[in-house]
Amino acid sequence: MGNLLSLTDASWTLFALYAVAFIVATVALHQEFLRLRARIPGLPGPPALPFIGNLHQVKGKPAYEQYRQWSKIYGPVFQVQFGILPVVIVNGNEEARDLFIHRHLSVISRPVLYTFQCPDSKESAFHGLSIGTSPWDASCKQRRRAAATALNLNAVRSYASILEFETKELIRELLEESSYAQKPVFLKPLLYHFSLNMSLTLNYGTRFLSLENPLFREIFEVETQISKFRSTSENLADFFPILRLPNYFGGGSSTRAKDIGSRRKAYTFRLLDELEERIKQGTDRPCIQGNVLKDQDVKLSKTELLGVSTSIIAGADSNLPTLGWTIAYLIQNPEWQTRLYSALSEYRTSKGHNLREGPGYADAEENTIPIFDAFVREILRFYPPLRMGIPRAAYKNTDYLGATIPADTEVLLNIWALNRDPAIFDDANSFIPERWLDEDNKANPRRIVYSFGLGARNCPASFITYRILYLTLVRLVWSFTLHAEPGTDGPNIDAIKGSTSYASLGQAIDDYSVVLKPRDIEALVEWLGEKPLSFEGLESE
Ligand code: HEM
Figure: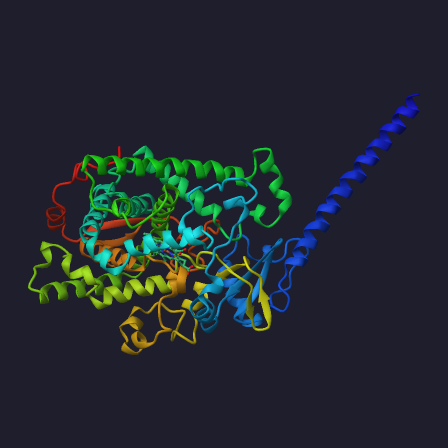
């Protein structure tokens, strides 16, 4: 009897082993079948491994540089595969212009990715999708139009006082955090505070006075998480359907995305409700959402309004890396601090001002000091925050050099490669702001900073971003000299080696601290004036 039982046990064990092996083999074969079927016939690309495709060659690595190297072998447009997901990478300037500008409809959409949008669920994790993550449809068109109108050149001119206020408050905060030059400042939260306040003031006419504000901390945490869910190479459930299984039991990545999505929804609704209340009371301050709410011609649902807001808040994320790289570059290149300060001094003096009065603002309004403007452009070219842009998708089947890119296929624009294309930029791998002073460059429509993308879904915030970066640079250079933290070599400003976190959509410089020495503390304190207790009484908690 004992023998019979143990024989049965052994058989059961064997059976279980066979069953597991059968399931694993079936899943693997299914995965491989889907991967092979998804490969785009006729489009070149690096050889892909079974099951995983090319994922091992880019995950956790500077993928943008790998793609640039591959483009030398496989041509300017090629495909890679991440598990079952084919992705088309566009590296060449002419090809990018062809697809993104001349045939702009072909890649006007954005992909629906499993982790972020969870297409099998009734409601997307990110209810009220931001514009930058929405596939192309009538609603997306409306939301984009509302954002583009709110951020066009004329509108940006009308935000002058907001830019003035927020950039001054950044300088004040840097001074206070450094205990008046007594200690190094850890930059990241301060830069986020500045960028977010800029977005909130523009969007809702409200801001956070303190970094300690619980709602500020909530937004900082949630938006950082969201950026990770939007990564193009890190969310494995996007590439391996089997990994979607835990979502059915409430534990997968898409479930976590939903939790983060509902936290985002809570604060965006709250900010919108507070604004509606202020409009009712007549205490609102001019702002983008206020204009949209009051404009009878704009017919956006509450969810669409939410989508415009989340886009503007998400935009804060892209300003952060640019400011981080700018300050790091100045720390490591003090001669540029001297050069910029001299240019500012010369400019202010030529306008009949004493430099001790302040850095000026009206002068900065149109980015008038050429070397400052050139420096900002070169920072954006050399350190593009979104090196692979924001994923696009083919809107319809698109013919390309004999191959057909099927509708909905993810398409990535390698902004990093375009900005460093030696056919466009002389000495493309060197940081040379002066290139933007050259009249021939200005006249060449190909010699542009590609960091804001191209064509019909490009960044609608480029005007305001230039203004913000320009003005911040003028004010930083006027206020302080910038130095490395004592006992360290300072931040690594190598565009690849200095940025080792690949889990987010944006490519920020690794964390660092800076020592800020006021150039003239009395003039600085005088210029800063009284600290505002709140922003016209609209401080959000
Ligand atoms: C240094 C700062 C910034 C950079 C480098 C940047 C770059 C980009 C890029 C590369 C895209 C995708 C373009 C394409 O697909 O062709 C994009 C889209 C977008 N950006 Fe920016 N951005 C910045 C700041 C901002 C800010 C501050 C805002 C909001 C105020 C903003 C709002 C948007 C929106 C709404 C989209 C989506 C457009 C669409 O899908 O139609 N961006 N941005």
